[in-house]
Amino acid sequence: MDARRGLAVVALVTLVAACGGSSSPSSVTPAPVPPPFTSVQQVRVSQASTFTAGCDGVPANGTLYTNTAVEPYLVASPFNPMNLIAAWQQNRWSTGGSQGLMLASSVDGGMSWTLTTAPFSRCTGGRAGNLGDYARASDPWLTVSPSGFAYALSLSFTGATLAPGSSSAMLVARSADFGVTWQLPHALIQDGPQGPQVFNDKGSITADPVNSSYVYAVWDRITSPTTAPAYFALTADGGSTWQTARSIYDPGPAAQTLGNYIVVLPGDVLLDVFTEITTGVNISSATVRVIRSVDRGTTWSMPPTTISELMSIGTTNPGNKNEPVRDGSDMVSVSALPVSAGGAGTVYVAWQDSRFSMGKHDGIALARSTDGGQTWSTPVQVNADPNVQAFTPTVNVRADGVIAVTYFDLRNNTNPSAAHLYAEQHLSGSFDLRNAPNSEGLFLGDYQALVSTGSGSAFLPFYAQPQLGSAVLTDAFISFPAAPAAAARVFPALAAAAGAELTPGARQRVTERTRLVQRQRLHGR
Image (spheres, rainbow, N blue to C red):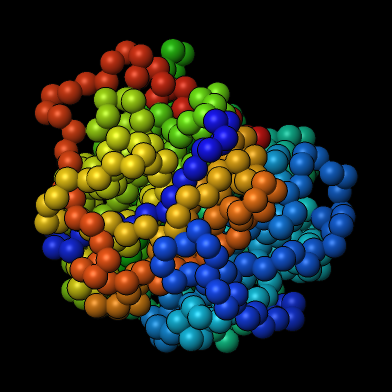
């Protein structure tokens, strides 16, 4: 291996004992033979870019990585479990965002796909007349209502974060035909270029799992390099109209929210789970927190409930410690036991954390609430190899209570200890992270995706991965792993040592990574 390069794998662990307008779509035939680096059945969903040079309509600013697909998202329709809808950033810029978001639909459980777009940016048909008149798009997110209507959310923007003359918006488009075509987007919020210098970032969208009339969107609105309150909008009529966006939590001066995500629980209860970053003179810290609404978002509980301190030091290329991987540091992944399965308030949160190695490298932490987010368990480590860097986790809990977590790691040839709780499967063999676009760090996405389609069904991971060779080229893949009992190694979940505290040096590394995340938000969206 080239000493300058970092080889990564994608892994899945399973807890087997529960504690108006669109572009024309095109059909895609998946590669008939899985790529040589895979260890499970895998279908490539992204395809070669069809965007034309200069389609964004502005002078180039940064390096454009053509034929890169990053930051993928996937959702399974509760109306038709064979209907999967995917999204990703296509053609990532080094300076943040992509030329456009690609969308794809499958009606055969992910074996074949139809590619399409919504006019979220100029390269996918955006213009002044349809609200999509933006140079770039980022942060794709998807949800599907019980009636089968799909919603796609985009951060669309022109210009740099907080720069004079820049603009940004949260745009949502709706599909009534399983994600094959998309209606013109609705703007949940638009800022600039004549208004205050603010920037909307890191949105997510969640359909009510029982009532198709309600869909909720949440994001942070950066108002300065260190402040970003959480903003919220909802529709009560299935996306025909949206209520005016408003702030639901402002952490105050020198503090910001990041990665807000809405969870819907029985009885019209909503949770907003997020990371809160506090910036001090000598130290910055990150905390996983949650606020709660019992009236569909009209009012929210204050102060927020703390889930855990977040102690990520981030990922670096093993061959070059000065080369960061832009991973999911200071972001969390959230999944709740489905309401249809009697999930009366069981919620899981996963994130990167260095506490298990005493600040030497990040592992994957998992915490649980069984009372609707009011109290939380002590985090445990759930990545199989505790001796290597693990990053960008995604958690999903199935209707029968089985939990799965996917993540990347940079492992050595070590074997996990035998036990009876968690089971690991590799979703791919090694790939070279240096073949990922560099956007304030080697970048496959701040998040990846993982879905299940019902009790006893397979978990379906969706993730970005570099191609073989030496060129910067990445694709989005869906995998079809076998049942855990047939293919997995088992290992125990690990708690951090009782009473252990990070050293001052490790605390400083946490601060440095938190401040890097803040810089990435400003320079690399």
